Image 1 (tube, rainbow, N blue to C red):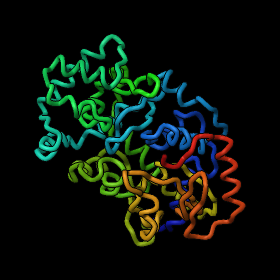
Image 2 (spheres, rainbow, N blue to C red; image 1 turned 135 degrees about the vertical axis):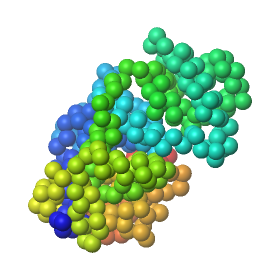
Image 3 (cartoon, one colour; image 1 turned 180 degrees about the vertical axis):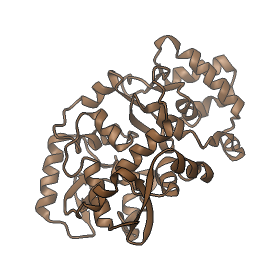
Image 4 (cartoon, rainbow, N blue to C red; image 1 turned 60 degrees about the vertical axis):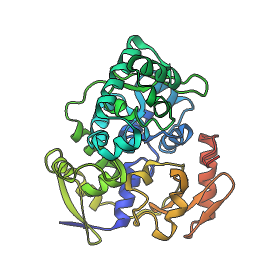
Length: 355
């Protein structure tokens, strides 16, 4: 079994994720390499892509969505993501594999049964047929009118989208072009099928965020730990060729084809400023102490589900930052932070801190 250090692993992830060096191509290439880009905050998603590009261009993400090369939809952890359109179906299949809407606790909390969801899905399919783009309010009204499910109107219209997320995973709907500050939904029937969805997702995840374990893959990134363990085990055993590596005494798995590359990777000293909800943090999870010291997790994973912009040095989170200040718990050269702030100013005029 190959033995590697965390310094090597983090340096390898920096390179694989187009962070050191920043040599990613267009938004689709970056989203594909990262296994999706979280997009709860649009400006954060755009920054996550721009910091990884050799030549970021304003408006490129919007163009890729309009051209249907990218799609915005609910995927991993039930959160909004930008996904390559040609692989999105794979992520949706894997994201919904937990089938949590079949659990009694879920049904009690949200007042909807699997039969209700099937009726809602049928109504949404009809309402969005013919290329219609409907606002949340319009789609809710259409579903209630077609199903008579007035008791579900409030939860259907919620910004959390709880009852609409299974519809996203079933490829009934995805996000359409916004109308001012209002979101719209369109049919997702145009998304092509992916022949081997599990292999597609695992190869992308392991190629950017490995080495990992099936449990960490699920808990930190996929479904917050609700996917059946037997299913996870079968995915890793049957869908991709993985091998174990020893990371400072921990057994992790990664794609067999990447082991030699990882073993040859030296630790990094690179300094990077990443925006809120960045894939580098989300892929490992905020509980990953090899990246975020346990004593400082609360500064990164804040109340309300906010994931702070972070300062990386050598792949480890050395502090957090916003538009006004930098808070460090490890030594980072001031000139390196100044250079990163200048770079981010050039590529992202949008603020990266919570309002």
